[in-house]
Image 1 (cartoon, rainbow, N blue to C red):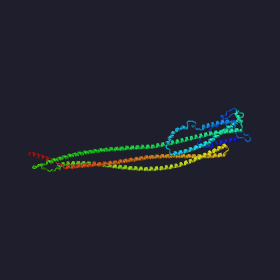
Image 2: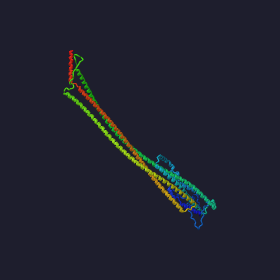
Image 3: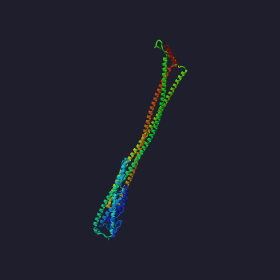
Image 4: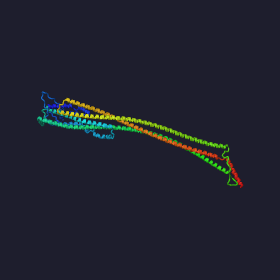
Length: 637
């Protein structure tokens, strides 16, 4: 009766502490561990498999319920197990443990431990290239914080899983096996009591006739053997479950890490594409602008070169014409001058008379009236020739004056253009300087905002890490407390079996409240971690935008520097053009000076020719006198 009552207590305890309900269910839900397949496995009577069925003693497959305790007036039945059941109990318990362990192993183990195609070790080589590619990516500060959080959470999960696997599975398996054992023993006893005339082998009869003490010793040995086998199987199952859980956590952690690295890599690729797109567009725009400027400058200078060539050809032709005219005039003047000199010499020779007394003495007749014109016609001719020369000189002076005015106007226009260009360059420089100051101010303000935001994120991250550490410590304490309570409860349930239900309910309520608090703390920590991850993403986005803005500003600065260089180049070209204009002006002044000198020489020659002019009538008379003198001398001889 005491044994029956103790078995009833164990049944109530096992049914009250079912791992699938109450505390264990909440804890399994909190830790994320699936329920054991042993909860779902139907109960089977091992005697149906081991014990042979006979006609005299039929055995049903349904377990017999426990009998109620006898009333006060009735005589209690002895609930001992006969001696002849020792071998059957040992064989049945051994086969039952092997079958249940096989079923539990087949149900608890994941598919990849059974040899299926979803083995993570087979999938692992497929992930190695991605991991190898992700290792080449630069780890940012946000990824380091995420890695620390994931390490903490994985450690917590592994500790929780170990504790749960150590307590819940052990208690669960022990309770299930003890229930099955008690059901089997009760069923065997009830079947033997129901059929006393059944045929029993001599060994069984001999064991049945053994004394009561031997039966108790055999029962104790059977129970010890079963408990040892159960403990061994539980240890194996516990180790395998821990390994499976660790591998699953490692697999999830690696998958999460790979996904994060892939996302980071994709974000960096997109940002690099965007940055290079901006650079390419900026360089294309700059190339188009430079090409257009080069074409305009080339066409402008080609036009200038054509105009200068045309002007140079005109000036050369004009100078050649002037030189030819001046040469013709010089030759004509020299011819006239030689003729006049010859006539003067002839006239002087004709007026020389040899004296009769002295041969060496000569008589020189004075020339009179040689510079006077003969009549009005000759005077008018001479005046018209002089007027024609003066007119040519005036035309030449007017032409030279017009050229001088054109050169002065060109110099004035160049000066005006140079001043306008310098004014435009100063305006652009001032505008660029103001834009640069505004850009520096905006950049400084944005950097201050980013520094403040980074400091705030750092403070929040430190606080979150501190809170996560405290939560992890509390979880560990709660898990240790729960393990201690479960161990105490298991020990007391096996030894005494008389724990008050009120204490059990109170302890369970306390543990459930602690687990609920831990779950809420875990949810709060998870929400905080997500918020921090979002803030890190926002900060990274702001950082990329800042980099893009810096790149655009750098491109603008390059453009401004190019504009300044082009302005400096144009200014140098303007200065060189001014120098060329000054040189051309000096050259034209020298040419004008030479022309004036030539005109002065011509005027001087004209005056000399006018002074040394010989009258033709006097020359004729002189020639006649010479002829008469010569005829006189010949006649005299």
